[in-house]
Image (cartoon, rainbow, N blue to C red; front, side, top):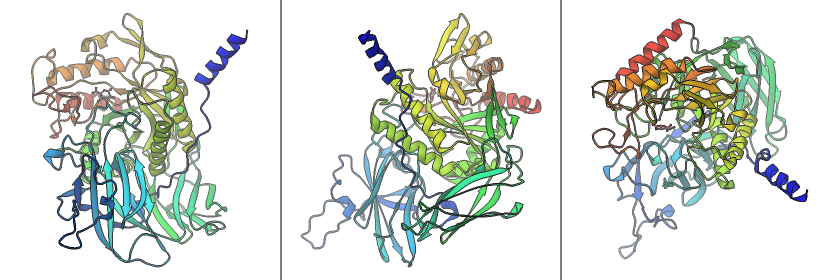
Length: 599
Ligand code: GCU
Protein backbone atom coordinates (compact mmCIF):
# COMPACT_ATOMS: atom_id res chain seq x y z
CA UNK A 1 0.00 0.00 0.00
CA UNK A 2 2.69 2.53 1.12
CA UNK A 3 4.78 1.88 -2.04
CA UNK A 4 1.93 2.63 -4.45
CA UNK A 5 1.17 5.85 -2.46
CA UNK A 6 4.81 6.82 -3.07
CA UNK A 7 4.44 5.99 -6.78
CA UNK A 8 1.34 8.14 -6.96
CA UNK A 9 3.17 11.02 -5.30
CA UNK A 10 6.07 10.72 -7.75
CA UNK A 11 3.66 10.60 -10.67
CA UNK A 12 1.94 13.65 -9.21
CA UNK A 13 5.25 15.54 -9.18
CA UNK A 14 6.21 14.45 -12.75
CA UNK A 15 2.99 15.82 -14.19
CA UNK A 16 2.40 18.55 -11.56
CA UNK A 17 0.37 21.46 -12.83
CA UNK A 18 2.66 24.37 -13.60
CA UNK A 19 3.96 26.35 -10.63
CA UNK A 20 2.78 29.97 -10.19
CA UNK A 21 4.66 32.10 -12.71
CA UNK A 22 7.97 33.53 -11.61
CA UNK A 23 7.64 36.07 -14.36
CA UNK A 24 8.76 39.59 -13.43
CA UNK A 25 7.10 42.49 -15.22
CA UNK A 26 8.71 43.59 -18.45
CA UNK A 27 10.84 46.72 -18.25
CA UNK A 28 10.47 47.32 -21.96
CA UNK A 29 9.39 50.81 -23.03
CA UNK A 30 6.43 50.35 -25.35
CA UNK A 31 6.14 52.02 -28.74
CA UNK A 32 9.55 53.67 -29.04
CA UNK A 33 8.51 54.67 -32.57
CA UNK A 34 6.03 57.07 -30.92
CA UNK A 35 8.64 58.64 -28.64
CA UNK A 36 11.37 61.28 -28.80
CA UNK A 37 14.51 59.38 -29.70
CA UNK A 38 18.12 59.92 -30.76
CA UNK A 39 19.31 57.31 -33.25
CA UNK A 40 22.66 55.60 -32.62
CA UNK A 41 22.68 53.46 -35.77
CA UNK A 42 25.62 53.68 -38.13
CA UNK A 43 29.23 52.50 -38.28
CA UNK A 44 30.49 51.33 -34.89
CA UNK A 45 34.10 50.45 -34.26
CA UNK A 46 34.27 46.80 -33.34
CA UNK A 47 36.85 44.43 -31.87
CA UNK A 48 36.51 40.74 -32.70
CA UNK A 49 37.67 39.00 -29.50
CA UNK A 50 37.51 35.19 -29.98
CA UNK A 51 38.95 34.35 -26.55
CA UNK A 52 37.00 37.06 -24.72
CA UNK A 53 40.30 38.63 -23.82
CA UNK A 54 38.70 42.00 -23.28
CA UNK A 55 36.34 40.88 -20.57
CA UNK A 56 37.86 42.87 -17.78
CA UNK A 57 39.00 45.96 -19.66
CA UNK A 58 37.57 46.76 -23.07
CA UNK A 59 34.53 48.41 -21.51
CA UNK A 60 36.83 51.17 -20.34
CA UNK A 61 37.94 52.09 -23.86
CA UNK A 62 41.39 53.06 -22.58
CA UNK A 63 43.83 54.92 -24.77
CA UNK A 64 47.61 55.18 -24.24
CA UNK A 65 48.24 58.32 -22.22
CA UNK A 66 51.95 58.46 -23.01
CA UNK A 67 54.40 56.97 -25.49
CA UNK A 68 55.37 54.26 -23.04
CA UNK A 69 51.81 53.36 -22.14
CA UNK A 70 50.95 49.72 -23.10
CA UNK A 71 47.29 49.35 -24.17
CA UNK A 72 46.82 46.21 -26.30
CA UNK A 73 43.55 47.09 -27.94
CA UNK A 74 42.10 50.08 -29.72
CA UNK A 75 38.57 50.74 -30.86
CA UNK A 76 39.79 53.75 -32.85
CA UNK A 77 42.12 51.55 -34.89
CA UNK A 78 39.60 48.72 -35.25
CA UNK A 79 37.45 48.43 -38.40
CA UNK A 80 33.77 49.27 -38.19
CA UNK A 81 30.64 47.17 -38.37
CA UNK A 82 27.29 48.60 -39.41
CA UNK A 83 24.52 48.79 -36.83
CA UNK A 84 21.93 47.46 -37.32
CA UNK A 85 23.31 44.44 -39.07
CA UNK A 86 24.72 40.98 -38.47
CA UNK A 87 28.53 40.78 -38.63
CA UNK A 88 28.48 37.54 -40.68
CA UNK A 89 27.46 39.15 -43.97
CA UNK A 90 29.55 42.27 -43.45
CA UNK A 91 32.94 40.57 -43.52
CA UNK A 92 33.73 37.30 -45.24
CA UNK A 93 36.01 36.14 -42.43
CA UNK A 94 33.13 36.57 -39.96
CA UNK A 95 30.63 34.46 -41.89
CA UNK A 96 31.18 31.46 -39.62
CA UNK A 97 32.27 33.44 -36.55
CA UNK A 98 30.63 32.59 -33.22
CA UNK A 99 32.06 34.40 -30.23
CA UNK A 100 32.47 37.78 -28.55
CA UNK A 101 32.65 41.05 -30.48
CA UNK A 102 32.99 44.42 -28.73
CA UNK A 103 31.17 47.37 -30.28
CA UNK A 104 31.83 51.05 -29.43
CA UNK A 105 29.72 54.08 -30.28
CA UNK A 106 30.79 57.56 -29.25
CA UNK A 107 28.08 60.25 -29.24
CA UNK A 108 27.55 63.78 -28.08
CA UNK A 109 24.56 64.49 -25.89
CA UNK A 110 22.99 67.58 -24.35
CA UNK A 111 21.27 66.68 -21.07
CA UNK A 112 18.01 68.34 -20.06
CA UNK A 113 16.55 68.71 -16.58
CA UNK A 114 13.56 66.56 -15.58
CA UNK A 115 14.35 64.23 -18.42
CA UNK A 116 15.13 60.54 -18.21
CA UNK A 117 17.06 58.75 -20.92
CA UNK A 118 17.08 55.05 -21.77
CA UNK A 119 19.34 53.18 -24.20
CA UNK A 120 17.09 50.95 -26.34
CA UNK A 121 18.15 47.95 -28.47
CA UNK A 122 15.74 46.37 -30.98
CA UNK A 123 17.72 43.12 -30.72
CA UNK A 124 21.24 41.80 -30.14
CA UNK A 125 22.16 38.17 -30.88
CA UNK A 126 22.63 36.40 -28.49
CA UNK A 127 23.98 37.89 -25.29
CA UNK A 128 24.67 41.62 -24.76
CA UNK A 129 26.51 43.37 -21.93
CA UNK A 130 26.07 47.14 -22.12
CA UNK A 131 28.39 49.79 -20.70
CA UNK A 132 28.08 53.56 -20.79
CA UNK A 133 31.07 55.72 -19.94
CA UNK A 134 32.74 52.71 -18.33
CA UNK A 135 29.73 51.81 -16.15
CA UNK A 136 27.73 48.64 -16.70
CA UNK A 137 24.08 49.44 -17.49
CA UNK A 138 22.94 45.84 -17.73
CA UNK A 139 22.94 42.61 -19.71
CA UNK A 140 20.42 40.84 -21.90
CA UNK A 141 20.01 37.35 -23.29
CA UNK A 142 17.99 36.31 -26.33
CA UNK A 143 18.67 37.32 -29.90
CA UNK A 144 15.25 38.50 -31.01
CA UNK A 145 13.64 40.60 -28.29
CA UNK A 146 14.06 44.28 -27.52
CA UNK A 147 15.48 45.66 -24.29
CA UNK A 148 16.37 48.98 -22.70
CA UNK A 149 18.40 50.24 -19.76
CA UNK A 150 18.04 53.57 -17.95
CA UNK A 151 21.11 55.75 -18.59
CA UNK A 152 20.01 59.02 -16.97
CA UNK A 153 22.50 58.89 -14.08
CA UNK A 154 25.52 57.78 -16.12
CA UNK A 155 24.90 59.93 -19.20
CA UNK A 156 27.22 62.96 -19.57
CA UNK A 157 26.46 66.39 -20.94
CA UNK A 158 28.84 66.20 -23.91
CA UNK A 159 30.96 63.25 -25.05
CA UNK A 160 29.64 59.75 -24.20
CA UNK A 161 31.01 56.28 -24.93
CA UNK A 162 28.62 53.34 -25.34
CA UNK A 163 30.25 49.90 -25.41
CA UNK A 164 28.43 46.62 -25.99
CA UNK A 165 29.98 43.19 -25.68
CA UNK A 166 27.99 40.89 -27.98
CA UNK A 167 28.40 37.12 -27.89
CA UNK A 168 26.53 34.72 -30.16
CA UNK A 169 28.08 31.53 -28.89
CA UNK A 170 25.40 28.82 -28.84
CA UNK A 171 24.63 27.28 -25.46
CA UNK A 172 23.02 23.96 -24.45
CA UNK A 173 20.91 25.86 -21.89
CA UNK A 174 20.07 28.61 -24.39
CA UNK A 175 16.86 29.50 -26.29
CA UNK A 176 17.44 28.33 -28.99
CA UNK A 177 19.93 25.68 -27.88
CA UNK A 178 22.88 24.23 -29.87
CA UNK A 179 21.16 23.11 -33.09
CA UNK A 180 18.79 25.03 -35.35
CA UNK A 181 18.10 25.26 -39.04
CA UNK A 182 18.97 28.94 -39.56
CA UNK A 183 22.21 30.93 -39.62
CA UNK A 184 23.43 32.07 -36.24
CA UNK A 185 23.79 35.67 -37.35
CA UNK A 186 25.59 37.58 -34.62
CA UNK A 187 25.64 41.25 -33.81
CA UNK A 188 23.53 44.29 -33.01
CA UNK A 189 20.90 43.28 -35.51
CA UNK A 190 18.22 45.96 -35.00
CA UNK A 191 18.09 49.70 -34.28
CA UNK A 192 19.77 51.30 -31.28
CA UNK A 193 18.54 54.62 -29.91
CA UNK A 194 18.34 56.86 -26.89
CA UNK A 195 14.75 57.25 -25.73
CA UNK A 196 14.00 60.55 -23.98
CA UNK A 197 11.06 60.54 -21.56
CA UNK A 198 9.80 62.86 -18.81
CA UNK A 199 10.37 62.09 -15.12
CA UNK A 200 7.04 60.24 -14.94
CA UNK A 201 6.26 58.59 -18.23
CA UNK A 202 4.01 55.98 -19.80
CA UNK A 203 6.08 52.78 -19.73
CA UNK A 204 3.52 50.49 -21.34
CA UNK A 205 -0.19 50.25 -22.10
CA UNK A 206 -2.80 47.92 -23.50
CA UNK A 207 -5.62 49.26 -25.66
CA UNK A 208 -7.55 46.31 -27.05
CA UNK A 209 -11.10 45.02 -27.27
CA UNK A 210 -12.16 42.98 -24.27
CA UNK A 211 -12.11 39.24 -25.03
CA UNK A 212 -15.23 38.29 -27.02
CA UNK A 213 -16.54 41.89 -27.32
CA UNK A 214 -16.66 44.01 -30.45
CA UNK A 215 -17.31 47.36 -28.75
CA UNK A 216 -15.83 47.21 -25.24
CA UNK A 217 -12.30 48.50 -24.87
CA UNK A 218 -10.56 47.18 -21.80
CA UNK A 219 -7.01 47.94 -20.91
CA UNK A 220 -4.44 49.63 -18.77
CA UNK A 221 -1.64 52.16 -18.66
CA UNK A 222 1.51 51.61 -16.61
CA UNK A 223 3.29 54.78 -15.51
CA UNK A 224 6.93 54.76 -14.55
CA UNK A 225 7.93 57.49 -12.15
CA UNK A 226 9.71 58.11 -8.90
CA UNK A 227 8.07 56.20 -6.04
CA UNK A 228 4.95 58.10 -5.01
CA UNK A 229 5.04 60.23 -8.15
CA UNK A 230 3.18 57.68 -10.24
CA UNK A 231 0.13 57.33 -7.98
CA UNK A 232 -3.01 59.48 -8.22
CA UNK A 233 -2.02 60.65 -11.69
CA UNK A 234 -4.66 61.59 -14.28
CA UNK A 235 -4.36 59.29 -17.28
CA UNK A 236 -6.18 60.15 -20.49
CA UNK A 237 -7.03 57.86 -23.38
CA UNK A 238 -8.34 59.45 -26.55
CA UNK A 239 -9.46 58.09 -29.89
CA UNK A 240 -10.42 61.39 -31.50
CA UNK A 241 -11.89 59.79 -34.65
CA UNK A 242 -14.65 58.08 -32.64
CA UNK A 243 -15.00 60.72 -29.92
CA UNK A 244 -13.41 58.69 -27.14
CA UNK A 245 -12.03 60.86 -24.31
CA UNK A 246 -11.57 58.72 -21.18
CA UNK A 247 -9.88 59.92 -18.00
CA UNK A 248 -8.89 57.56 -15.20
CA UNK A 249 -6.55 57.78 -12.20
CA UNK A 250 -3.46 55.70 -11.56
CA UNK A 251 -3.03 53.66 -8.37
CA UNK A 252 0.00 53.78 -6.09
CA UNK A 253 1.86 51.43 -8.43
CA UNK A 254 1.25 53.81 -11.34
CA UNK A 255 -1.32 51.49 -12.91
CA UNK A 256 -4.54 52.87 -14.40
CA UNK A 257 -7.22 50.65 -15.89
CA UNK A 258 -10.23 51.45 -18.04
CA UNK A 259 -13.21 49.70 -19.57
CA UNK A 260 -15.63 51.54 -21.80
CA UNK A 261 -17.62 51.09 -24.99
CA UNK A 262 -16.89 52.60 -28.38
CA UNK A 263 -18.29 52.16 -31.87
CA UNK A 264 -15.31 51.02 -33.92
CA UNK A 265 -14.52 49.92 -37.44
CA UNK A 266 -12.97 46.53 -36.85
CA UNK A 267 -9.54 45.59 -38.23
CA UNK A 268 -9.44 42.75 -40.75
CA UNK A 269 -7.28 41.69 -43.74
CA UNK A 270 -9.87 43.21 -46.09
CA UNK A 271 -10.05 46.38 -43.99
CA UNK A 272 -6.89 46.90 -41.86
CA UNK A 273 -8.29 49.92 -40.06
CA UNK A 274 -5.92 51.58 -37.60
CA UNK A 275 -6.97 54.41 -35.27
CA UNK A 276 -4.78 57.19 -33.94
CA UNK A 277 -4.81 56.63 -30.17
CA UNK A 278 -3.47 59.32 -27.85
CA UNK A 279 -2.37 58.44 -24.32
CA UNK A 280 -1.29 60.99 -21.74
CA UNK A 281 -0.21 60.41 -18.17
CA UNK A 282 2.36 61.95 -15.83
CA UNK A 283 4.21 64.45 -18.00
CA UNK A 284 4.00 62.14 -21.00
CA UNK A 285 1.91 62.09 -24.21
CA UNK A 286 2.25 59.39 -26.87
CA UNK A 287 0.46 58.47 -30.07
CA UNK A 288 0.00 54.99 -31.45
CA UNK A 289 -1.85 53.52 -34.44
CA UNK A 290 -3.98 50.67 -33.15
CA UNK A 291 -6.46 48.34 -34.81
CA UNK A 292 -9.32 46.68 -32.97
CA UNK A 293 -10.48 43.14 -33.73
CA UNK A 294 -11.51 40.04 -31.82
CA UNK A 295 -9.91 36.62 -32.35
CA UNK A 296 -11.29 33.45 -30.79
CA UNK A 297 -11.85 29.76 -31.32
CA UNK A 298 -15.23 28.07 -31.75
CA UNK A 299 -14.99 24.33 -32.17
CA UNK A 300 -12.67 23.78 -35.15
CA UNK A 301 -13.06 27.35 -36.39
CA UNK A 302 -10.97 30.42 -35.81
CA UNK A 303 -13.27 33.44 -35.61
CA UNK A 304 -12.07 36.90 -36.57
CA UNK A 305 -14.56 39.53 -35.42
CA UNK A 306 -17.03 36.74 -34.75
CA UNK A 307 -16.82 35.15 -38.22
CA UNK A 308 -14.95 32.00 -39.25
CA UNK A 309 -11.78 32.82 -41.18
CA UNK A 310 -9.36 30.60 -43.12
CA UNK A 311 -5.70 31.50 -42.66
CA UNK A 312 -4.08 31.53 -46.11
CA UNK A 313 -0.48 31.77 -45.02
CA UNK A 314 3.20 31.14 -45.55
CA UNK A 315 6.12 30.71 -43.15
CA UNK A 316 9.10 33.02 -43.37
CA UNK A 317 12.45 33.68 -41.74
CA UNK A 318 13.80 37.16 -40.99
CA UNK A 319 16.35 36.81 -43.77
CA UNK A 320 17.05 39.82 -45.95
CA UNK A 321 16.01 39.45 -49.58
CA UNK A 322 18.78 39.77 -52.21
CA UNK A 323 21.65 40.82 -49.85
CA UNK A 324 20.94 38.06 -47.26
CA UNK A 325 21.78 38.36 -43.59
CA UNK A 326 19.35 39.44 -40.85
CA UNK A 327 16.54 41.56 -42.25
CA UNK A 328 15.82 44.70 -40.23
CA UNK A 329 14.72 47.62 -42.40
CA UNK A 330 11.30 48.89 -43.52
CA UNK A 331 12.45 48.14 -47.10
CA UNK A 332 13.27 44.51 -46.22
CA UNK A 333 9.83 44.18 -44.64
CA UNK A 334 8.14 45.75 -47.67
CA UNK A 335 9.83 43.33 -50.07
CA UNK A 336 9.17 40.20 -48.00
CA UNK A 337 5.57 41.00 -47.06
CA UNK A 338 4.98 42.20 -50.62
CA UNK A 339 5.76 38.64 -51.79
CA UNK A 340 3.46 37.28 -49.06
CA UNK A 341 0.64 39.45 -50.36
CA UNK A 342 1.44 38.49 -53.96
CA UNK A 343 0.88 34.84 -52.98
CA UNK A 344 -2.65 35.80 -51.97
CA UNK A 345 -2.01 35.39 -48.23
CA UNK A 346 -3.96 36.95 -45.37
CA UNK A 347 -1.65 35.36 -42.77
CA UNK A 348 2.08 34.89 -42.16
CA UNK A 349 4.06 32.75 -39.72
CA UNK A 350 7.14 34.61 -38.48
CA UNK A 351 9.45 31.64 -37.80
CA UNK A 352 10.97 30.74 -35.34
CA UNK A 353 11.61 33.85 -33.25
CA UNK A 354 10.04 37.32 -32.80
CA UNK A 355 10.70 39.26 -35.99
CA UNK A 356 11.54 42.97 -36.14
CA UNK A 357 8.94 45.62 -35.41
CA UNK A 358 9.05 46.95 -38.98
CA UNK A 359 7.56 43.66 -40.16
CA UNK A 360 4.92 43.54 -37.43
CA UNK A 361 3.80 47.13 -37.98
CA UNK A 362 3.71 46.65 -41.74
CA UNK A 363 1.56 43.52 -41.27
CA UNK A 364 -0.77 45.70 -39.16
CA UNK A 365 -1.05 48.22 -42.02
CA UNK A 366 -1.24 45.59 -44.78
CA UNK A 367 -3.91 43.50 -43.07
CA UNK A 368 -1.76 40.39 -42.62
CA UNK A 369 -2.57 38.28 -39.57
CA UNK A 370 0.57 37.05 -37.76
CA UNK A 371 1.74 33.92 -35.98
CA UNK A 372 4.61 35.04 -33.68
CA UNK A 373 6.92 32.51 -32.00
CA UNK A 374 9.73 32.28 -29.47
CA UNK A 375 12.74 30.11 -30.40
CA UNK A 376 11.98 27.11 -28.18
CA UNK A 377 13.10 24.94 -31.06
CA UNK A 378 13.73 21.18 -31.29
CA UNK A 379 15.41 19.83 -28.12
CA UNK A 380 16.47 22.17 -25.31
CA UNK A 381 17.48 21.87 -21.65
CA UNK A 382 13.90 21.28 -20.43
CA UNK A 383 14.68 20.62 -16.78
CA UNK A 384 16.90 23.64 -16.29
CA UNK A 385 15.11 26.44 -14.37
CA UNK A 386 17.42 29.03 -15.96
CA UNK A 387 16.36 27.87 -19.41
CA UNK A 388 12.71 28.16 -18.43
CA UNK A 389 13.32 31.65 -17.05
CA UNK A 390 15.05 32.56 -20.32
CA UNK A 391 12.12 31.31 -22.39
CA UNK A 392 9.65 33.10 -20.13
CA UNK A 393 11.59 36.35 -20.46
CA UNK A 394 11.59 36.08 -24.26
CA UNK A 395 7.84 35.38 -24.25
CA UNK A 396 7.21 38.29 -21.88
CA UNK A 397 9.24 40.74 -23.98
CA UNK A 398 7.77 39.53 -27.28
CA UNK A 399 4.28 40.16 -25.89
CA UNK A 400 5.35 43.46 -24.28
CA UNK A 401 6.46 44.82 -27.66
CA UNK A 402 3.58 43.60 -29.82
CA UNK A 403 0.50 43.22 -27.62
CA UNK A 404 -1.18 46.29 -29.15
CA UNK A 405 -0.80 45.04 -32.73
CA UNK A 406 -4.12 43.84 -34.17
CA UNK A 407 -2.19 41.80 -36.75
CA UNK A 408 -0.77 39.42 -34.15
CA UNK A 409 -3.40 36.74 -33.50
CA UNK A 410 -1.29 33.78 -32.31
CA UNK A 411 1.54 33.36 -29.82
CA UNK A 412 3.48 30.14 -30.49
CA UNK A 413 5.45 28.76 -27.55
CA UNK A 414 7.60 26.26 -29.46
CA UNK A 415 8.46 24.45 -32.71
CA UNK A 416 8.93 20.67 -33.22
CA UNK A 417 9.75 19.67 -29.66
CA UNK A 418 10.17 16.07 -28.47
CA UNK A 419 7.27 14.40 -26.64
CA UNK A 420 8.56 13.83 -23.08
CA UNK A 421 7.32 14.75 -19.58
CA UNK A 422 9.81 17.51 -18.78
CA UNK A 423 9.02 19.15 -22.12
CA UNK A 424 5.30 19.00 -21.40
CA UNK A 425 5.78 20.63 -17.98
CA UNK A 426 8.01 23.32 -19.46
CA UNK A 427 5.68 24.19 -22.33
CA UNK A 428 2.53 23.95 -20.22
CA UNK A 429 4.12 26.60 -18.01
CA UNK A 430 4.82 28.80 -21.03
CA UNK A 431 1.24 28.42 -22.24
CA UNK A 432 0.04 29.47 -18.78
CA UNK A 433 2.40 32.46 -18.81
CA UNK A 434 1.19 33.52 -22.24
CA UNK A 435 -2.44 33.43 -21.10
CA UNK A 436 -1.60 35.49 -18.02
CA UNK A 437 0.33 38.02 -20.09
CA UNK A 438 -2.30 38.31 -22.80
CA UNK A 439 -5.81 36.89 -22.47
CA UNK A 440 -6.95 38.31 -25.82
CA UNK A 441 -4.94 36.11 -28.24
CA UNK A 442 -4.72 32.43 -29.14
CA UNK A 443 -1.90 30.14 -28.01
CA UNK A 444 -0.35 27.55 -30.30
CA UNK A 445 2.74 25.49 -31.05
CA UNK A 446 4.06 23.67 -34.15
CA UNK A 447 3.89 19.94 -33.40
CA UNK A 448 5.44 17.21 -35.52
CA UNK A 449 4.82 14.01 -33.62
CA UNK A 450 2.02 11.93 -35.10
CA UNK A 451 1.05 8.28 -34.70
CA UNK A 452 0.67 5.90 -37.62
CA UNK A 453 -2.86 4.71 -36.93
CA UNK A 454 -3.41 2.86 -40.19
CA UNK A 455 -1.79 2.03 -43.54
CA UNK A 456 -2.35 5.51 -44.90
CA UNK A 457 -3.48 7.15 -41.71
CA UNK A 458 -1.79 9.43 -39.24
CA UNK A 459 -3.18 10.82 -36.01
CA UNK A 460 -2.08 14.00 -34.29
CA UNK A 461 -2.25 13.36 -30.54
CA UNK A 462 0.78 15.04 -28.98
CA UNK A 463 -0.27 15.73 -25.32
CA UNK A 464 0.81 19.37 -25.65
CA UNK A 465 -2.22 19.84 -27.90
CA UNK A 466 -4.44 19.49 -24.82
CA UNK A 467 -3.39 22.92 -23.53
CA UNK A 468 -3.33 24.81 -26.85
CA UNK A 469 -6.11 26.84 -28.44
CA UNK A 470 -4.90 26.02 -31.95
CA UNK A 471 -2.68 23.09 -32.94
CA UNK A 472 0.04 23.52 -35.53
CA UNK A 473 1.26 20.53 -37.53
CA UNK A 474 4.58 20.30 -39.33
CA UNK A 475 4.53 17.37 -41.76
CA UNK A 476 6.99 16.62 -44.54
CA UNK A 477 5.30 13.78 -46.35
CA UNK A 478 7.07 13.41 -49.71
CA UNK A 479 10.28 15.01 -48.47
CA UNK A 480 11.50 13.59 -45.13
CA UNK A 481 9.73 10.31 -45.81
CA UNK A 482 7.49 8.79 -48.46
CA UNK A 483 6.90 10.09 -51.95
CA UNK A 484 4.92 13.20 -52.92
CA UNK A 485 2.16 11.03 -54.36
CA UNK A 486 1.64 9.33 -50.95
CA UNK A 487 -0.28 12.47 -50.05
CA UNK A 488 -3.03 11.41 -52.44
CA UNK A 489 -3.98 8.54 -50.12
CA UNK A 490 -2.97 9.85 -46.68
CA UNK A 491 -5.76 10.34 -44.15
CA UNK A 492 -5.20 12.55 -41.14
CA UNK A 493 -6.91 12.43 -37.78
CA UNK A 494 -6.69 14.76 -34.83
CA UNK A 495 -7.33 13.99 -31.17
CA UNK A 496 -9.12 17.34 -30.76
CA UNK A 497 -11.88 19.36 -32.40
CA UNK A 498 -9.60 22.33 -32.26
CA UNK A 499 -8.52 24.44 -35.23
CA UNK A 500 -5.58 22.87 -37.04
CA UNK A 501 -2.99 24.90 -38.91
CA UNK A 502 -0.58 22.97 -41.15
CA UNK A 503 2.32 25.12 -40.04
CA UNK A 504 4.89 23.44 -42.31
CA UNK A 505 5.08 21.25 -45.39
CA UNK A 506 7.41 21.61 -48.31
CA UNK A 507 10.41 20.44 -50.28
CA UNK A 508 13.61 21.89 -51.70
CA UNK A 509 14.27 23.11 -55.23
CA UNK A 510 17.02 25.12 -56.87
CA UNK A 511 15.58 28.02 -58.84
CA UNK A 512 16.07 27.38 -62.55
CA UNK A 513 16.79 23.68 -62.14
CA UNK A 514 14.29 21.80 -64.27
CA UNK A 515 13.52 18.15 -64.95
CA UNK A 516 10.68 15.72 -64.45
CA UNK A 517 8.61 15.64 -61.28
CA UNK A 518 10.57 12.72 -59.86
CA UNK A 519 13.89 14.49 -60.07
CA UNK A 520 14.74 15.88 -56.66
CA UNK A 521 15.89 19.51 -56.33
CA UNK A 522 14.03 20.49 -59.52
CA UNK A 523 11.25 23.04 -59.52
CA UNK A 524 9.01 20.34 -60.98
CA UNK A 525 9.60 18.06 -58.00
CA UNK A 526 8.76 20.84 -55.55
CA UNK A 527 5.71 21.85 -57.59
CA UNK A 528 4.44 18.29 -57.79
CA UNK A 529 4.86 17.98 -54.01
CA UNK A 530 2.86 21.19 -53.50
CA UNK A 531 0.05 20.07 -55.77
CA UNK A 532 -0.30 16.79 -53.89
CA UNK A 533 0.01 18.41 -50.47
CA UNK A 534 -2.64 21.02 -51.23
CA UNK A 535 -4.99 18.27 -52.32
CA UNK A 536 -4.27 16.37 -49.11
CA UNK A 537 -4.57 19.24 -46.63
CA UNK A 538 -8.01 20.13 -47.99
CA UNK A 539 -9.15 16.71 -46.74
CA UNK A 540 -7.74 17.27 -43.25
CA UNK A 541 -10.14 17.57 -40.29
CA UNK A 542 -10.47 20.95 -38.55
CA UNK A 543 -8.22 22.64 -41.09
CA UNK A 544 -8.21 26.39 -40.30
CA UNK A 545 -5.05 27.48 -42.05
CA UNK A 546 -1.75 26.82 -43.76
CA UNK A 547 1.79 28.20 -43.61
CA UNK A 548 3.89 26.12 -46.01
CA UNK A 549 7.64 26.04 -45.46
CA UNK A 550 8.90 28.56 -46.68
CA UNK A 551 8.64 31.94 -48.44
CA UNK A 552 12.30 32.39 -49.41
CA UNK A 553 15.47 30.26 -49.48
CA UNK A 554 17.50 31.09 -46.38
CA UNK A 555 20.99 30.49 -45.07
CA UNK A 556 21.47 27.51 -42.80
CA UNK A 557 24.53 25.75 -41.35
CA UNK A 558 22.69 22.41 -41.70
CA UNK A 559 22.42 22.52 -45.50
CA UNK A 560 25.72 21.45 -46.97
CA UNK A 561 25.08 19.90 -50.41
CA UNK A 562 27.48 21.65 -52.83
CA UNK A 563 25.96 23.11 -55.98
CA UNK A 564 22.47 22.67 -54.55
CA UNK A 565 22.27 23.98 -50.99
CA UNK A 566 25.64 25.65 -50.38
CA UNK A 567 24.59 26.47 -46.81
CA UNK A 568 21.05 27.38 -47.86
CA UNK A 569 17.74 25.75 -47.13
CA UNK A 570 16.20 25.62 -50.62
CA UNK A 571 12.57 25.07 -49.62
CA UNK A 572 11.73 28.64 -50.54
CA UNK A 573 9.02 29.43 -53.08
CA UNK A 574 11.22 32.38 -53.92
CA UNK A 575 15.00 32.17 -54.27
CA UNK A 576 17.13 34.50 -52.17
CA UNK A 577 17.46 36.53 -55.38
CA UNK A 578 13.69 37.07 -55.52
CA UNK A 579 13.09 34.55 -58.33
CA UNK A 580 9.73 32.80 -58.07
CA UNK A 581 9.75 29.00 -58.44
CA UNK A 582 6.90 27.03 -60.12
CA UNK A 583 5.36 26.11 -56.76
CA UNK A 584 4.95 29.82 -55.96
CA UNK A 585 2.29 30.02 -58.67
CA UNK A 586 0.67 26.74 -57.59
CA UNK A 587 0.13 28.08 -54.08
CA UNK A 588 -0.97 31.46 -55.48
CA UNK A 589 -3.60 29.75 -57.65
CA UNK A 590 -4.76 27.63 -54.71
CA UNK A 591 -5.20 30.73 -52.47
CA UNK A 592 -6.97 32.58 -55.28
CA UNK A 593 -9.47 29.75 -55.50
CA UNK A 594 -9.99 29.76 -51.73
CA UNK A 595 -10.40 33.54 -51.62
CA UNK A 596 -12.94 33.43 -54.44
CA UNK A 597 -14.79 30.78 -52.47
CA UNK A 598 -14.88 33.18 -49.54
CA UNK A 599 -12.22 31.30 -47.56
C1 GCU B 1 11.59 21.84 -39.73
C2 GCU B 1 11.79 23.12 -38.99
C3 GCU B 1 12.30 24.21 -39.88
C4 GCU B 1 13.24 23.62 -40.91
C5 GCU B 1 12.43 22.72 -41.79
C6 GCU B 1 13.27 22.04 -42.84
O1 GCU B 1 10.41 21.45 -39.72
O2 GCU B 1 10.72 23.59 -38.25
O3 GCU B 1 12.95 25.13 -39.08
O4 GCU B 1 13.88 24.59 -41.65
O5 GCU B 1 11.86 21.70 -41.04
O6 GCU B 1 13.68 20.94 -42.57
O7 GCU B 1 13.49 22.61 -43.88
